[in-house]
Image (cartoon, rainbow, N blue to C red; front, side, top):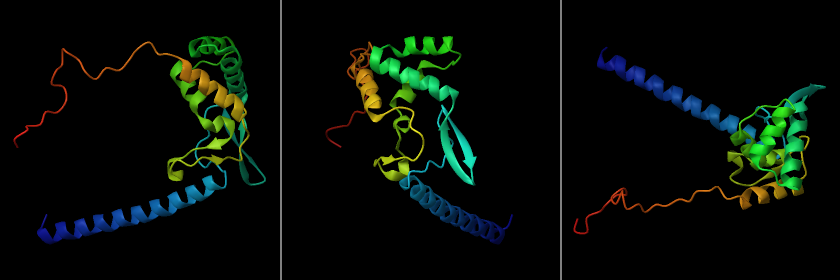
Length: 171
């Protein structure tokens, strides 16, 4: 409660924050090195399981992943909508939101490519089992990009004339 006690507490907070930043820096450099080697060190995405063999960690496609492979093929070869694919997957026992399925279709992890914030936009080939080929992934994303969403963004609205910031020309 005294000024000197408050000073000591604040100094301890500063040292604790410094220690946390050093740990984060070391941890993130290790994560970046692992990802550059092609190893995914986070929780595996939907459709993969973590398996340990001989003390090493591997990512393998599980039963849900096999169904997702079918979904990618349906999208690429038949051009089905995401909603139609979702319904087909439900009939096979896999329930998920169509938004999640759309996210999965756009995730390059499933074709063997790692993308991570620590890589600063540079993709890396992963060592994990691929769910689909890069050609199928690109074809699926072409189909997704061709889809119209039925709405358009309009930033000008006559009913909201001053929705943006207004600056005075004299000040």
